[in-house]
Amino acid sequence: MSEPDLATPFRERAGQALDDRFLQEALTIATTKFITLRREAFDAFPQGEALRDQARAIKEATLQRLDHWLEMLIDNVERRGGHVHYATGADEARRIVLDIARRTGARMAVKSKSMATEEIHLNDALEAAGVTPVETDLGEYIIQLAHERPSHIIAPAIHKTKGQVAELFRRELNRDAAPDPEVLTQIARAELRQKFLQADLGITGANFGVAETGTVVLVTNEGNGRMVTSLPRVHVAVMGVEKVIPSMTDLAVFLAILARSATGQKLSVYTSLVNGPRRGGELEGPEEFHLVLLDNGRIRQIAGPLREALSCLRCGACLNVCPVYRQIGGHAYGYTYPGPIGILLTAMLNGPGSVKDLAHASSLCGACVDACPVRIDIPRMLIELRRELDEQRIAPWPERVVFGAFAWLLQRPALYRLSARLGRLLQRPLARNGRIRRLPLFFGSWTRTRDLPPIAARTFHERWAELEREARR
Image 1 (cartoon, rainbow, N blue to C red):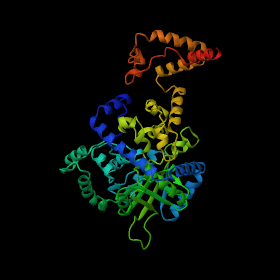
Image 2 (image 1 turned 180 degrees about the vertical axis):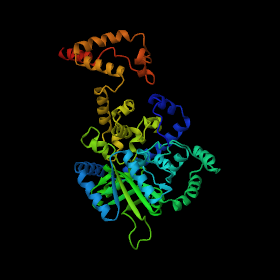
Image 3 (image 1 turned 135 degrees about the vertical axis):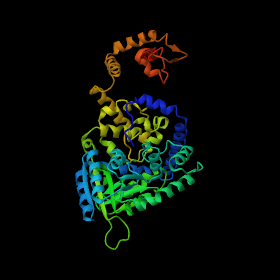
Image 4 (image 1 turned 90 degrees about the vertical axis):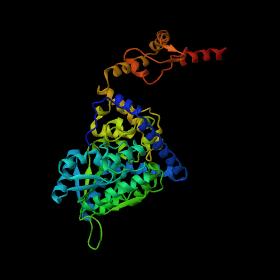
């Protein structure tokens, strides 16, 4: 899978998504279902709100001593016979995995769902090195066949309808099938079963790394995760450094809210606790276990403006409720991580310049904060990003000029009142039936997809002054 085409402007990518009726159908069905399931799950779980606060506190406390907990995790993984590698960036992470593959003679790698490996574009590197990567999560398998990237954090093929998947299987696997999820799943299972037995290398991500025990935790809804971690000779887990948590007690808190936030389940179907390689007397498990701790810009943000985003559990709840994501889907964002949290993660990994358009792809409605299991204040950080773009002069110059002039005007009350009176005169040719539907010049971008209300006949300040005069009579 190649790098996304970022040469196409975001506005154009979003427009193409809005015109795709299949995408609109798939997004509406899936996100509405996720929203309903999450709401029902928390309505029936009175402890949920308190656990969300507790989970947020655990994340914050862990970040304050991240070096301590990472050192403990490393010590305990190695004590259990595993190997730990530290990657400062995507290039180093890819090199570590490829070195393991070469040393062990791997020719095929089966993969469980992992956004971290998507982040470092591992599949492309494996293919270039002569190692065939096979995605075994059903959604990831579908988009691998389609040569696409995930469009959702937990539901990578959310943008495809059942009919599109059936057609994909007919074209790529030469298998005719009805557009029925159960039938399509059976086909994928039959195709993948032999791959598990042939693979030399199993690659996963990690939802959590428990420092006190050296345990890597995988939360999945399909049995493929356990096949990937137990059948191949070598297991490699790629984990962002922020995924470490102190204890099993803390893990219980996160497991209680993660599945509810993601899919509305009380608990995911499979919660796998990986404790290193197979030891003497054990019948299954890999001969070697490697944990790759991925920084890739995360450590820098501990003291940065995006620190709060490091608490993200990758549940996807903010995507499901976001009015922008629900209209344009994940691919329009152009990077690995879509949705409102994806904008922050993209800025973290690629710098604020990478989101000069995406930083404005939010209504700032706050629905994401309400849905987030650890209450990440995404709107606040998006506003901070917009401010940073302005200060670094990354935002387009017309935008900087307009907002700079507006800020200057707001600091001068007399001129502001005068501008209101002038605005009423200037808007007369443009206002029709209580709406301004088109503005001239580059201001037209504001009215391309929205109407604007005209300047009121009386400002609040003018009305307030009248009320004060009436009160004194």
